[in-house]
Amino acid sequence: MRNLVCKLIVSFAAISLLFFQPASAAEKILKEKPKVMVIIEEKVGGLFGTTGFENVGQAESAIMEKFIKGGFNVVDPAIVKANISRDQALRILEGDDSAAAAEGLKYGAQVVITGKAYSKNAGGKLFGTQMQSLQATVQARVVNTDTAQVISSRSATASKAHIDEMQGGALAIKEASETLASDLIQDITAKWRGEGYGGSKEITLIISGLVSYRHLTAIKQFLGKELQGVRAVHERSYTEGIAELMLEYGGTSSNIAGALANQSFTGFRLEPTNVTPNRIDIKAVIAK
Picture 1 (cartoon, helix red, strand yellow):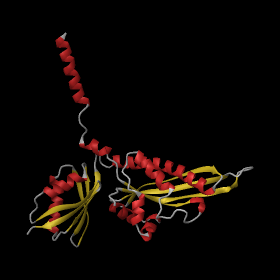
Picture 2 (cartoon, helix red, strand yellow; picture 1 turned 180 degrees about the vertical axis):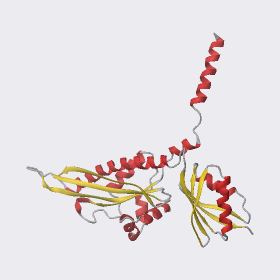
Picture 3 (cartoon, helix red, strand yellow; picture 1 turned 45 degrees about the vertical axis):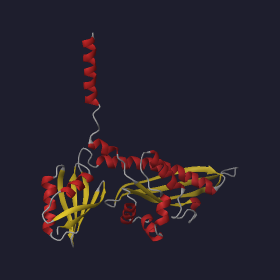
Picture 4 (cartoon, rainbow, N blue to C red; picture 1 turned 90 degrees about the vertical axis):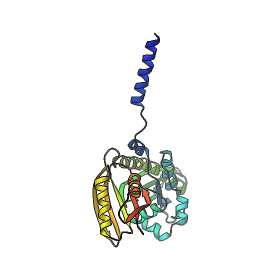
């Protein structure tokens, strides 16, 4: 009997080791979620200036709350709006994706959610009452700050009946924003899962401080022939000592940054200055 119990314990331990192995690096990456920045222009009741870019509106608050509940790290909109210029905010809100990406990078955000929210009276008061029908529309796009590419674009609508046009409009915007946020979370999560976790993803590598094209050639050879997991190395540009490469890689950007920092190149070394999931900025330091 004792031998049978011992065998059962050993068998259970073996099964446990089989099914409860520590999460692989890819699994850990899959659980990571990008840091998010939100900037939405809001007009309640169709009135311009009811919520200026410098104030955190109902749409931003609702979207931020939804993302936080979803496990995302969200940049405080109040901090962003306290430091952003009106011109920069207008550029972002009018669809300048490069401006959105640049602003997001200042706060370490991997994605920026930007767009417009507005509400309007659907047509007077409801029959026999003082209630008004308010309709809201929220439109937003998601910009990847590493590439300045739009990875999602969504809109949502909602309506509310309320005696006060401003309050009813704000409530309608809140409801539409919550619906929109749920859709955006699905899009962003799917995008992050699809970028190489188990396959390969594109990582942008910006190298500055190069004094010779031979140095760039040495870096490309190391990446393409010696660094495991690199499927392809594409040179996008080389101008005045600054090179941009696009890597198809099956691991994380931090792995690449670490490998480049520790690699011994002839006549120079590389020092990472900024590392995000999809982009690495690195500087060549010439040996003295």
